[in-house]
View 1: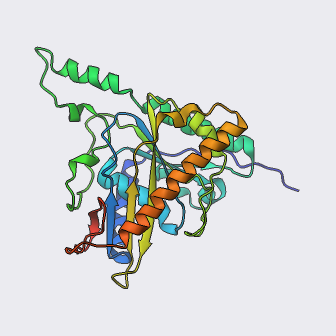
View 2: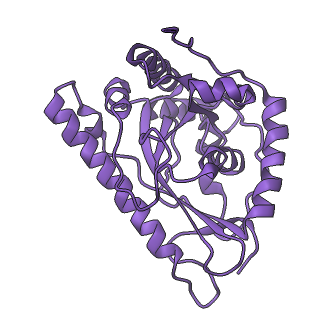
View 3: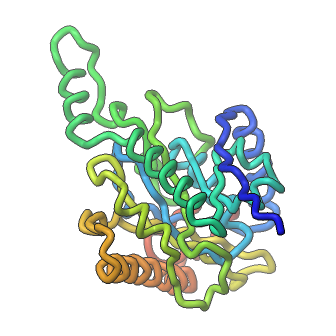
Length: 295
């Protein structure tokens, strides 16, 4: 019997490949979807690194983070993929994907430690950015806006109902945005959200001064065309008390249930609002057109 455990596979920084694959992905989205809608109105500009956690219900979940990051967030996007899948599709490494081996707890822990280090080492506390802004205002220094002092997350610069253009090169080194599906596998959309243990461990290790957890929900439907419409809603950063998990099994399970509840409510609200439209044909809520046909 073969007891060999696959080695951890790290990501590869490849801006050229990332850009080429992004344009290829745009072609896929434009061919397969009538429109892609994004509600990021709850996301605030931040210098913290971001852990994005969402529901995992479709094949497209692998490409949605690339689309959102390249068109709006402009962080150093990272993601986890099952080690066997990453061995099968190694090109994902050049898109910022690293492996996790859920079959072997020690290997899975190695991936979680790597993820925590990525986030904690690139995020900056808000007070450091405030200091940078004040430094830029001192006599003899060129004037610099507070927005340009931030290294990432320029989503708020896009106005509602305006399709965002291709990403621009960030002015400073961007923080990491790690996309994570804590359910651990594809599940049916109607299945209650249940989180694997990885999110509980990871939340304990994150530095709340440097890192935030942002929930998101993905939903699609065919209500208005033979091509589906894709809806992505990003929620508010989780309360810092979510970082208070300290290894007690009962407390950890309670906190994990709270996170699952937040994801469920966000998913249900996305489904509800995406099914109702105003007189101009726009979906309810804060959705703006990111890609595709206007109403």
